[in-house]
Length: 438
Ligand code: NAD
Image (cartoon, rainbow, N blue to C red):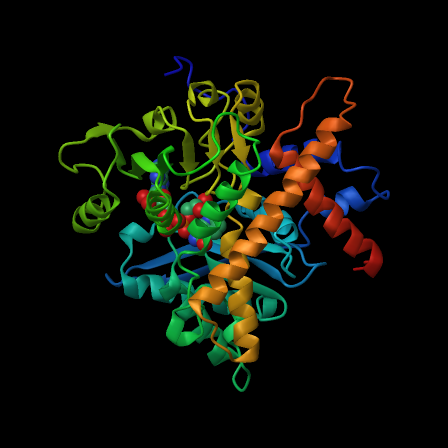
């Protein structure tokens, strides 16, 4: 481990998002005056405060945010997160990531994100239901099937989405409101395959990238060793699917810590233990490690699937993987990107790697508007096509900017720059064609 593990840079996710954007702009070609300011900043930030009675009859106030970053390509789209560390900056950064993600995976949405400052681990189901209903009531008409469409994120799930739909539907009777939110239970208009979509999209994108000879010495998931930080909806699915494809999962973690076994963990046993005890820690006959150790585990593929800024200037040099697959949003800081690149570690950026969630959210939205239910086969086939196309476009742009790289300061691009350039150009084209005026 690096002795000096404290980061030397800002870990404010909004600063990170804007640094990434500014970096990519240098390869994006000339943009019309004023366009950069328009593309960089959110269109709308809603900050609400609501109070409710908890189960113990005390009253507590909560803060919630919904940021609409851009909707030139379609309605805002992005998850709602319940976490004690939610801030306006974090939500704004995540909304911007959604704008670039929906553009690179090419679904007709803009970018948005929401969050409520709360700790779901200390709240009952009834309290979470009341928080969700109050938040939706406060958001009022800022969300809607054709304006801004929420989805699950950290510590929210299909049940939360069901409450959002129900509250919105009560407030707007007489319409088909199912498309107001995605990630719903199947019975309420959810799409088959949505739960696993982000993890499956990670798999599709990783397979495509490895087939493109961009990662030195690694051309297949089969036989690769994998470490996963965060075993929630995304990380647990990734563990299962990468294992199914022949990878050996050597380390995993959750908020309580991690476990490792160089001979390979048994995903079924890991999940059974987590379901029984609430954590992966304590599984018999494996090593216990910290979340920081997990990032430095000897493996081919590292999948951060929990929170942001976990790879920074203080620990990026410790990464031994050859490929980092960003299942989480914003796990790598710009300084870490450069350290990893200099050490020959390729980063498959979040806006591509975890784009499978929003792709299947788009499929769900289409099914809701048409009152249809697609088969799992159809969802998975179309998801794979979208993910492959996004990786191909990113890889082609990467080669183009590498070939024509004329940066005097010697800045060498990374895949994230290429993905952002594709997204920025795609959105700019639409903005200029529409002649945006409000
Ligand atoms: P989740 O709530 O289902 O799981 C989060 C996981 O992270 C849990 O296992 C938790 O124990 C773990 N965790 C929390 N704090 C941690 C810490 N400090 N160290 C290590 N692990 C920690 O959330 P999710 O939906 O799986 O989302 C995970 C990431 O993927 C987030 O960055 C989210 O923005 C991103 N993402 C999710 C989706 C989706 O469809 N759910 C789509 C795109 C991106």
